[in-house]
Image 1 (tube, rainbow, N blue to C red):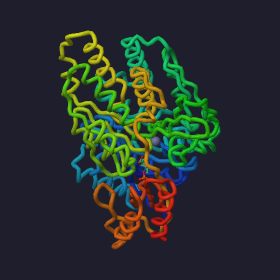
Image 2: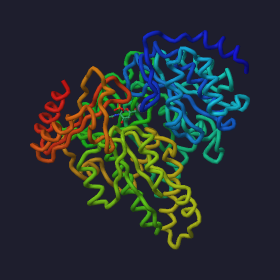
Image 3: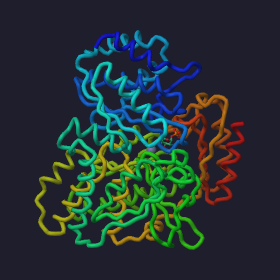
Image 4: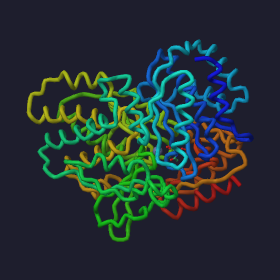
Amino acid sequence: MSTDTLSAASARHQKPSKTTFTYGTAGFRTLGSLLDSTVFRVGVLASLRSAKLGGKTIGVMITASHNPPQDNGVKVVDPLGEMLPQTWEPYATQLANSDNFEDDVRDLVAGENIDVEQAGLVVVGMDTRETSPQLLRAAVDGIEVFGRAKSFGELTTPQLHYLVRSHNDPAFGEPSEDGYNKKTVGAVAEILRLWNIQDPLEITVDAANGVGAPKLHNLSRDPIKITVVNDSTHDKSVLNVECGADYVKTNQKLPANVRPRDRQLYSSFDGDADRVVFYYTDGSLFHLLDGDRIATLLASFIDKLLQQAKVQAKMGIIQTAYANGNSTKYVQETLQIPVDFTPTGVKHLHHKAQEYDIGVYFEANGHGTVLFSDNLIKSLKNKQPSSPEEERALKTLLLLTELINQTVGDSISDLFAVLLALRIQNKTCVDWGRDYIELPNKLFKVLVKDRFAFKTADAERRLVEPAGLQAKIDALVAAYTRGRSFVRASGTENAVRVYSEAASAADCAELGARVCQLLE
Ligand code: NG1
Ligand code: ZN
């Protein structure tokens, strides 16, 4: 395409003055009303990425996940469903802020040696926010300068990842939303049949008034019976408000509109359905089953299947500093599975998980998945079982590799994997909650003048800047039994996060409050 088209198109998407955009943990994220030019420019970048990769299909997702309704965001998805590589993030940031957009595009094309004629397809999805349809049009406008766009309208983030992957890798599944549904429901139905389970999988899900709601309705067919609450996607003001996975995890309480029966399992998705948490009540007590629990449940279930299938595999669990200290202890001492720590953000966890035959990674907030290596899948397929029990375990493991989204954390497939792990092991939610007792923990958000002044090391567990602050935190922590606290800048909000943990709830609250005071 000619640069005339680029200049004509970019003139339709004027950059707001006085706003700086940064491609952070989850792409660009800010008020939806400020994002038109940024999303257009991301569209251009995505088609250049496709050209750079010889015409492979790339994805663009418009969402601000669990953020409030007025926010929005955009991120780019690479051909196999992974995040945009970190080497390209600065290009995104530079183009978004550029005052000489056409020149900078030309420099990028020259610098990366891109043949723009090679630009192929970019698939686009969006969540249910008010600003999403207009931003989707801006993305398409940008993509069409060099490449072709195919819009799938409303999608969950993991569905968009699935679509990108299946466009490049037909063996992964049919490249359509229906293909995603068939793959998911098919694997669930087959696992239930293998284990001779007649009753459907049933649960009530709080969909955060987001895109997960209509998508769950589409999937709820035999043998899956989902009741969805907080499914008001038409009222644009209620997304993630007093509901959803982030609300439940942060406040450690029930979302609006869930009236639980005691000792029954419930679940919450976030606004774009890539996080899921579970919970139950027992009298007046609320028990949260978060991402750390999902990791331990799935890892121990898979471990049991590996033993039954007589398969050797190297399994690891990847956590971040937000994982509860007792979950780490349980994994290392009881499950005897190695634990690695990475900085926050699934791209870091995902890469580490790829080092194992089976890499289980979940952020405490419920964002995660289980990755199975190609080698392991090959050896599962080639293994000749010597007993019906062995055969069933082998088939179940292979079906889990189909069910569990291999590209990114996925509320829908994680939900089913958890329900199956519980059902097959005859484990109730109360049993699950007793695997280990969580240390009391609390998350604080502090507004500071410059969050970029906070620099960390050691998987974000220690501050190296501002100088001297870490020593003060250490001194506070030392005074509490099993105390732990750390400080890092958020990559998605203009704030600094403080995490605290201690043997008692009172100590945990006090320690957290004292660390927050250090930041004032
Ligand atoms: P930030 O804002 O960088 O803490 C939050 C989550 C991350 C991750 C990203 C992307 C916490 C404490 N942080 O990042 O784990 O999920 O959003 O959505 O939950
Ligand atoms: Zn999300």
